[in-house]
Every structure is written in structure tokens, then in C-alpha cells.
Length: 330
Image 1: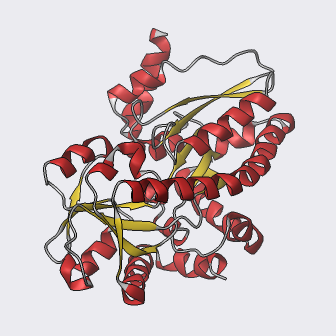
Image 2: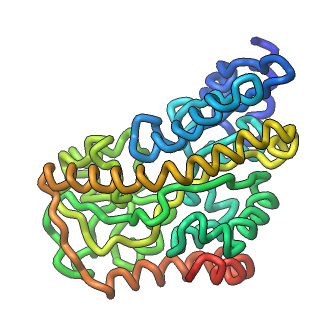
Image 3: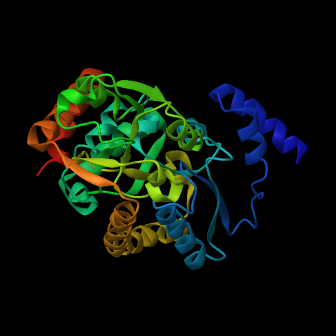
């Protein structure tokens, strides 16, 4: 155990992973018999949330169908913070992660074309979009996206007070941000505050922020619905959580092991059809019960959101984004 921790610590220093994360990684079980490969996975969000449960379902499916062949041990952001997980995947410190593009924007800025896509996962695969995106991921993150979820679930800006009647009313508001919202919030004239998810409840409670950006799913999971009063519509962009695997590790799998993963992907994408419907209904019912009302700012608001992100993506990754754009639009 000590020797293993020392090795992990040296590797972690090389890729900028925190000492706490390294200690948690050492708790992963060592490999079992040679016939059964043990993979290490990490989720950007706790598994008991709307966006954590799908990855847990995928892992459970692999473990159920892959007994004696392949198994996955998983940790959440309490062990490895979400922003550290892409580096951990690139280095091989973990083998698989569930992560949105905003958490690896600095490495693969063109990944945000997925947020702007109006296509399902199956359509992106058929268009060649997923294959093209994987070429970028292989080159820049040593990773491959096996599948993704959240497609079609929009993002919204949620506010603690009913202060916004027009786009101009955002000026001066303090909004909890993250990389995928940043260009839009700048275009709105809102000020941005970076607050970690575990600290956001307190930030809302104390008035440190006037609102936040978050998808249509799951604010009730985090207790934020208790302090939010308004959901600004229309929703913008599309949620993308990529289930990615270290490319080198994927290539090392035997055909039998790879089949378990591939079959789980097929099962997962079918499973997500019903999960999407149920979770969307549940989340909007919870928001209504919490007294959150919708304020619709119309097509100009939506256009501003899309234009701001496209400008940012093209600025940060002009060649790749131009090539990917038609593959992610129908």
C-alpha cells in the first residue's frame, strides 16, 4: 500500500493532482486476477444526484455483465475534484471519468461544440461527429468518449429574486459561473463569481451571488431550490456529460473485455431515453413546488447565448471547431 501510494504521489505531482486526491486514489483496490481487469473511475458530481445516477447505472451495468472479465471501482468529487479529473484521466491515474466539456475546456476547447449541438448521441455518432471529436480527445487528452448523456437538457440561469424583466436587467447581477457560461454572462453584462458546488448553497444563502447557471435537472438535489425564485427562459445550450476512458487503457482491453464495455454503451443509451423523460418531469415538478417561476426573455436572449459561445469556441479553437460544427448540427 505504501509503495503504491508513493508511485501515485510521484505521478500526481507530474500532472498537478492534489495530495488529498492521491490519498483517495490509493484506496482503490489493486488489480484482481489477470483474467479480470479492474478499472478506476471518477465522477464530477456525487452519484446520488440527477447527473451522477446515470454514470452509476453505467458502472453497475458493466460490473453486472462483466463479472470475471472487467469491473469498475468508482469515486466521486469528494475524492478527486471534478476539475482535476481530466488530468487524472490523461495521465492514467484513473481509467474512466464522467465529465462535462467545461471541465476540460483548457485542453480541448472545441469540445463545446457538443453543448451547441441539436443532435442526439445516436445522430452525432451517425454524422461522424463523435469519431471526429474523439480524434481531438485522443490527441489532447489521451481519451476517448464512449458515450454521453444529458443531450437535449438545456441550461438555465436561476435567480434568487425576481429582478429580471429584460436582457438589460442582468447588468450588475452577480452570477455563479463556470467556463461554459462565461461568454454568455459577459454578453449579458453580469459579473461572474466562481464558487465550488459544495459552497454554492452558502453563497446563495448569504447573498454572495444573485443566481447561478445550471441545467434543468437537479437543483433540488443540492438544496438550491430553497433559495431560487426565478428560472430565466428559454433554456440555452445542451447538457453534455461525456463518459470518457483513457485511450491507452482502452486499447489494452481484450476483445472480451471491450465487448462488455461496448454492450454497456448500447444498453446505457437505451436506458437514458426513459431516464431523461422521468428526470425532466421530476425536476420541473420540484422547481414548481419550490415556487420557482419562469420568466421568458424570448429568442433574442437565446440567440445571444448561442452567438457568445460560438464566438468563444471559434476564438479558442478556430480550425477544429470549424471542422466539427457541421457534424454537430442538423
